[in-house]
Image: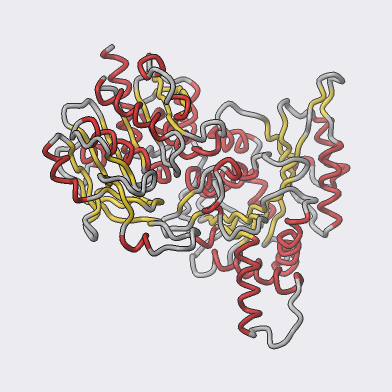
Length: 536
């Protein structure tokens, strides 16, 4: 039977519970355990698929096509766990399921209540992830902050699970804040004490505290926290700010957090260390041999989390090349009024990520035209690939009115359009082409050279596709169709002849990139950008 680690947070949001969960998963895998990681989100949306990026950040997509919370990206980047639709439990999913059962009459006339029906549904969904998957430890992150009314059913569910599983089978870890008051020159423990107090009021007693702090915790402070929060002194873990998130497992390892967790869960395993992570990831992040400047042209650049996986995958590409990637964010709307020559001066590469809607599109088209004409390495992802298609059609194939039907439903030259089945879609949620699909690569292309294989599988999240009606015309003009979905003959990757590196892909490669295993396309994009920097 799987053992469980429940991770809660208090005082304020954005304390890094997701990074903590991912780092613990990494440390436990290094000890030889198989881990599963779950995110419980208290919002009533069934999933984040219909939410604005400014509201929620990026939507992370799993292999089986689930649209999930961005924290699941951290889980997969840090660990080897493969996530699924069951790995993100939202209040919306839980309530939808319970109400559906009630309408069917499954409860046989009983009064349906938060306890036990909602809490039972949450518990069943948590246990489902480990059941039958040979999982040693299941890590469950509870979204929100202790004290929020929305989180209470999830907290009650894990309280019950902890009681049902018994000693040695479940562990509560609480992430909290130790603020430093500069005017007083003191680090304050009272917010942590109050947060733990709120947790204990609802019946959850944390056994390990991870204290977010910008300054080291003194021994006196550790002892004070341990005394007032009723935990062992060794269980007060310093979660100090680090420069790179990939340093977190190393920092926690130095404090023997993995050893403490195994002790609390009655597991005995040898310590194999995480030297590969330290040498192959952290050391290269701290002291890279080279630098490169990459422009990311998007419409949501004001919010860091909107393109979270993109930025992380660029970092991974840098690690693989022993280089620091300096990202320059370019607002595509502003670019419509600016000179691309000035904006992209000094850039060694340009990336256009995915997105939806017509805002900022013409700015992105100007960006593609500039990099195509000036031989600057280019990487277009999802919408970025479609923008590259539109630009090529307009300015190389002389299709002056070329566009996507997403932006102009009446365009006479729809080089990008909806598939027939998408035209019938009425509900927006979970109705795109989602999840992993196969793709065959053409030998001799930049994409084939990156992957070193002719058959790949990548994750998708989009509605609009390349219109095959224009395929021959564009091919004759110099576009290379480097990757095609074999089942539907859908264009997956485009390239351009006589260009140092120009790749547009319909899928989202950023979702499969890891710091110790950079995605091939991101790795080669940074390689090309570094060559551009050297040549100039």
